[in-house]
Figure 1 (cartoon, rainbow, N blue to C red):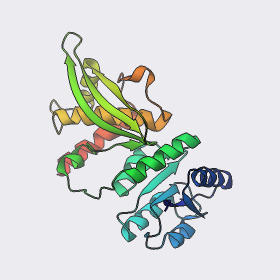
Figure 2 (cartoon, helix red, strand yellow; figure 1 turned 30 degrees about the vertical axis):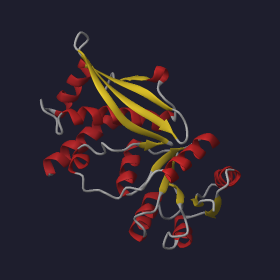
Figure 3 (tube, helix red, strand yellow; figure 1 turned 90 degrees about the vertical axis):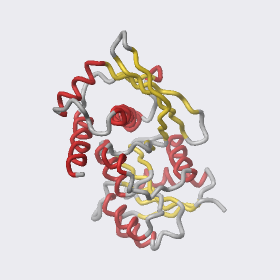
Figure 4 (cartoon, rainbow, N blue to C red; figure 1 turned 120 degrees about the horizontal axis):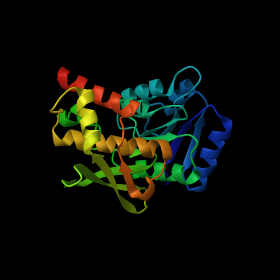
Length: 253
């Protein structure tokens, strides 16, 4: 039996594109146009293997719908869709229980990859991992259908830079190794911004920091970095807020 998917979106053109794409791929699709209607159709969540949920809806916003669904069924798998959201919204939704994120506009291929990746991946409801609470998520990420797993780290003492290698894969696709390079001057920028010589989590902080930068790229471009290499040359507003959140949680803990 094909997976049953609920699509909640008020834009008729996008709704139809999603429905036709997924039906052509063999899925069973039901539609809702508002958050309130979506919650009614969702019910106890047992009829659906996946929900595609738009963030900007009339009345109830997508994140509020997501929270209601998680209260009803914590095992539900939900992909949040957003045209105007940032990685900050993605992080907020992830902590609320979202399984993945799609940034509009997206292609049929990206949609199918994200859906298949989420369906194939077990839903984790474990939120009691202390390290993940301090440094957001060491064990994620899933963004635009891409999954990120840490591979290894290397250090180039001659150039005073660290390189973190991640395995990035799409659903039923090839896994590619992507390097995230953290030059010495970028490390100093982070330490100066955080006003500390010892960030929380030690080396795991730097691993998570580089993973966050890679996830932000995948969120924005839905594609691997050119040459499968990403150099962190500056602190973006998102990365600054990410650091702030880590320091806040660390102090609170």
